[in-house]
Length: 98
Image (cartoon, rainbow, N blue to C red; front, side, top):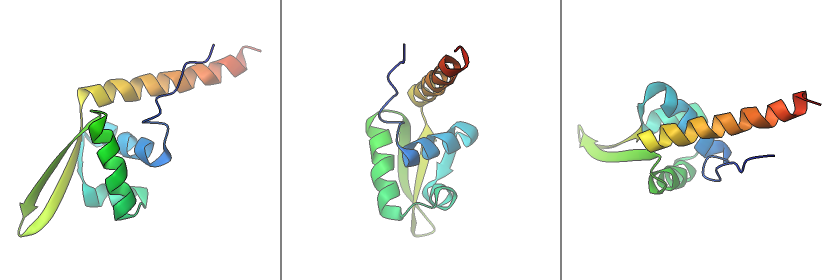
């Protein structure tokens, strides 16, 4: 009756990161940090988990002698996010059919 929810996306911060990236496609670490109010350390850990899952690509480079980390959602990430949202919608529909 209920589909399993993706455990990678079923974390508040990872879901917030993916929600941001689904809208903008690509964002730098500072932008994501500001929008999610996450600490740099926690955000780094969660970004790494999304990267390991193949949901985002992470590009690290230097810009004007400062490190710059950019995150970009992958097609696999878009597919996973859409499936997650669909599963949540199905959860909500079950309650309405009673």
